[in-house]
Each structure stands twice: as structure tokens, then as C-alpha cells.
Image 1: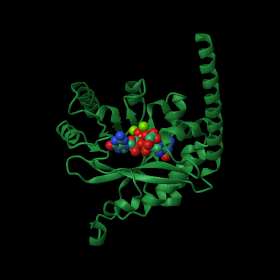
Image 2 (image 1 turned 30 degrees about the vertical axis):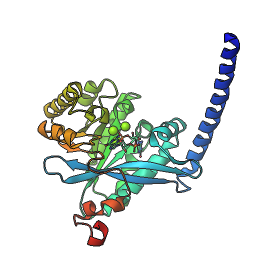
Image 3 (image 1 turned 90 degrees about the vertical axis):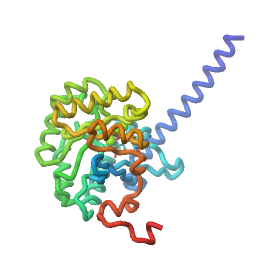
Image 4 (image 1 turned 90 degrees about the horizontal axis):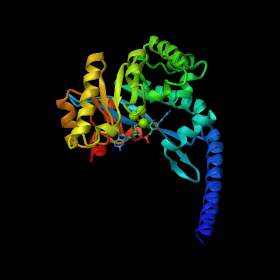
Length: 281
Ligand code: C2E
Ligand code: MG
Ligand code: MG
Ligand code: MG
């Protein structure tokens, strides 16, 4: 009886796996055409200086509107696109789109763009960044590239060489999701970072959990010691913000300041003028 049940369960799993494999193949296939079909768009989330509450930039976050599946989250499709190589075309589209957009802003705010390990290690990536900056006319210092620690480990010397060339153009480099990867401390020393982003999992409950608070204080101390500004991700409550302010964290990003959305919803920030009365109503 148990054996029979076991076999039934196994068949059930096999059937489900079959569906998952087919689904996955379909997503892989659809990703190859998503750029040309215009299914991607970029949403923007403000990054705010904590001491005076000024918006200093935005992070660009990719959204995929699949014709049948609807909105597919990046945590699902980015890893797949990295495995198949589609991320190269997708990432190039994101860089072009965001640099063009940011170049049109009245205020010279920064634009932070996530760059995958696959892009960083692809031949010609530094040249591509250079060409996109030139074509868009964006001042290089306004572009910030966000790299995760795991992006570095594949081929350390190569990643380092590419980052140095990009940095030499004046582009800034941020370490994203700090603390969630590994060998973070040696990476911080070896790579030319301009900013540390504390992962949202540490920011969360920083005002209620002594453990979380200790970790965030430690990262802030590390940033101070290395002369690197620190941004806290995923700030949702005034309690979290108060803690970060008291601990001299430089910048914050999270739902408390704004959810990622179309740039038109942030025009008051890119122009520096308040929204027109009819918009504000
Ligand atoms: P990330 O770069 O660490 O981006 C921050 C994520 O936290 C975003 O999720 C954002 O929407 C979310 N977030 C922001 N504030 C809050 C908050 O207060 N609370 C909570 N719970 N979440 C918040 P999203 O947009 O789903 O992106 C997930 C990940 O996908 C990103 O993590 C990044 O690793 C990747 N990704 C997104 N766009 C791109 C892209 O254009 N290229 C590459 N290579 N990766 C991207
Ligand atoms: Mg990021
Ligand atoms: Mg992050
Ligand atoms: Mg992340």
C-alpha cells in the first residue's frame, strides 16, 4: 500500500516536473523575443538621502509583461535569461532605455542599473557602456552600476578588469545585496566600489530585532572605515528610517519613499518642481 502510494506520488511528481520543464522551455523561448516584441518596461524607485530627505537618484527595475502570463517577476526570469544568454540583449536594452531616460531629466539625478554577472563577463561590456553613454549623452558620473557579490566570483580578474575600465569612464559602482553573498569582505577590498547597498533582509525589523540592528551597525561601521557611503534597501517603516538616521546611514530606498513605478509618477523629483495642482489632487 505504502509502495503503491509512493509510486503514485512519484508519477505525480514526474508529471509536475514535465509541466515545469515545458513551462521553463516556453519562458526561455519567449525571453528570446521579448525585447523585439516590446514586452519589457523599466520602473523606477527613488533613492533618498536620509539627512535631508532629498531624492538623489533612482534604481531602474525591469518588468516583463508576458502576453499570456502577465507580469513575470524578475527574480524568476532574470536567472533563466542568464542561463540562456538572453540577458545580454535584455541588459543592453535596459541600459540604453535608462540612460536615454535619465539624460532627459532636468535635475542631474543618478540612475542605478542592475548588471548581471553574465553581462559583466561578456567580451566588450565596457565598450558597450561607453557607447551607450556617448549615444545617450548621459554624464557618466550619473550612471551607477549595481553588481552583486556572486557576480564577481566567476572570473575575479576579468570582472575586476572590466569594472576598472568602467570606473575609469567616471561611472559609479555599487555592491548590491551586501551580506547575502560570500567572501564579501575581501571583495570590498579588491573591487573599486563606490557604495554599499545593505540587503532588505537586514533592514527589515532593524528597529525591533537587536540582531538585525547589530548587523546593520556593523555594515555602517565597515562603510565608514572604508570611506564608502551606505544605502539601506527595503525601508518600509518610519521606525526603520529613524534607526538608520540615528546610525548615520547615508541613503535609503524602499516602499516608505516610493514603490517602483513609471517615471511619470516621479516627475516632481526629476524636474524639482512640485506636481501641478490637478496632478496632486
Ligand atoms: P535588487 O536589485 O536588490 O532590487 C531591489 C528589490 O527590492 C526590487 O525587487 C524592489 O522592487 C524591491 N523593493 C524595493 N523596496 C522594497 C521594500 O520596501 N520592501 C520590499 N519588500 N521590497 C522592496 P524587484 O523589482 O522584484 O527585483 C528583484 C531583483 O531582480 C533585483 O533585486 C535585481 O537583482 C533583479 N533585477 C531587476 N531588474 C533587473 C535588471 O534590469 N537587470 C538585472 N540583471 N537584474 C534585475
Ligand atoms: Mg539592485
Ligand atoms: Mg538589492
Ligand atoms: Mg536582489
